[in-house]
Picture 1 (cartoon, protein in one colour):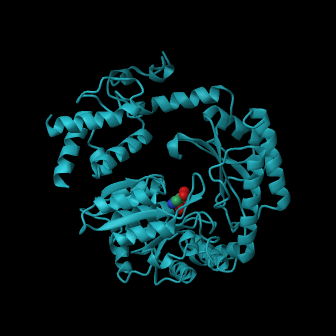
Picture 2 (cartoon, chains in turn yellow, brown):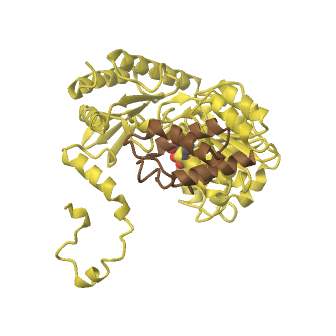
Picture 3 (tube, protein in one colour):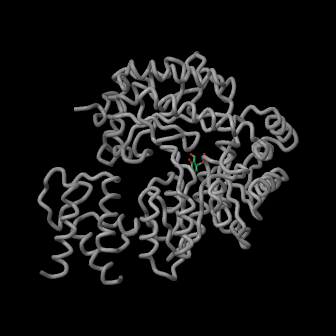
Amino acid sequence: MTDAGTLREDRPLDMLEHASAPDLLAKFDPLIAERQALLDTGVRDPFAIVMEKVLSPTEAIIGGKPTILLGTYNYMGMTFDADVIAAGKTALDEYGAGTTGSRVLNGTYQGHRECEEALKDFYGMDHAIVFSTGYQANLGMISTLAGKGDYIILDADSHASIYDGCWLGNAEIVRFRHNSVDDLDKRLGRLPKDAGKLVVLEGVYSMLGDIAPLKEMVAVAKKHGAMILCDEAHSMGFFGDHGRGVAEQEAVLDDIDFVVGTFSKSVGTVGGFCVSNHPKFEVLRLVCRPYVFTASLPPSVVATAATSIRKLMHAGEKRERLWKNSRRLHQGLRDLGFTLGTKSAESAIIAVILSDQTQAVGMWQALLELGLYVNMARPPATPAGTYLLRCSLCAEHRDEQVGQIMEMFAQAGRAVGCIG
Amino acid sequence: MSTRDETFAKVTDLIEPFNKKGIPLTDAVRFAQDLEWDSLTVMDFVAAVEDDFDIIITMNMQAEIETIGQLVDAVETLKAAA
Ligand SMILES: Cc1ncc(COP(=O)(O)O)c(C=O)c1O
């Protein structure tokens, strides 16, 4: 018998009397056992990393050791930008540490307005609404837009916040196969003509780093009279002429009714948003529960976000470096013989596909010991039950760091036996 | 054969490729517990059923369906409504 289900001898007797009531955490026993078995093999816990010091957007001290960061979403390296930090400090001094209130009551400061103005300018759109996280932006937008009797049509590989947004609302939920235009078309065609429809897409899918065929998908959605929400979390700042995302790059931004995004990636802080040209957009501030029933972002956060967003409008050079780094690493890892999530570098995310959990954790740990941090991803977060090491590049990775990264992958890959 | 029997035959045909343990398929067989399907298998299978019958089984509906019999009944209802 495993000890998960047994009582310890030193428990007081009155606890034993209640022993028959079900333990609500018992349902997680299989996961606890699986994790324990893995940790018993002597590996470090991939989900318990602590960054003791952060030296720059691309380097931190982990376990006392300087480590190159290749598993953050700090695509544009804005976290230590001098102007961004100065704006945050000023706001902290002038407006205090937090708002202690909802956006619709006492939680909208000048800085929240300025942040929304920056977003409107960045996207060239009429309306912008800032949420406390990107997760909440999806929860709020999806659950509020699609009500009872309406349909949400989403990609099977959608981010958890999109799925949770669906379950928070009362709409009917329909999935289509990942990035399949034909599957989307068929499913939309089977829905009642007069029902409200919201198609939810992402510009970049964050697990494999592949991009959506937005041009074709938007055309199909429009043909069936659906509204479109596109989550551009992983594309803001470096796709399209103005960095507005994959929809801009594919020249369909005008047909996207709602763009959702986050400040926790390219912008380099925390927060979420939606921008739109819909004339009735502002009413959402009154009816969107994840906007109303939570405290607004601290003044320092919206000040850093607004400054960062305005700088990202003119970040052509960073954009080029990010693409150069992404293409170089993608090519390098492919040449080493790794299996990658995409044929070429479609985004700044490169997913290294491994055969199972043991290989993934072994590889992850070998890299960490060499001084490289990547993300490990496992089901259910990953599509098709795959184990991935997810690498995401930063505009601030120096050429020599990218070279070191490839050497570390070569060394770790041979040691673990996933390349020849 | 009644239309329910036909639907049952078609549905079980679609299950077979995913019936790794070779369980005899009856109305009472449960997808999660008996066939031991994970969410990805469910996704593939549901898409196949939808395309075969030209219907939509929403995720809300899927959440209520546990057995083969319930699925066959749902398909019958959806076909009638289409
Ligand atoms: C596609 C997508 N949408 C939304 C989010 C949530 O963003 P945030 O970190 O701001 O909650 C993420 C981040 O993990 C994401 O990948």
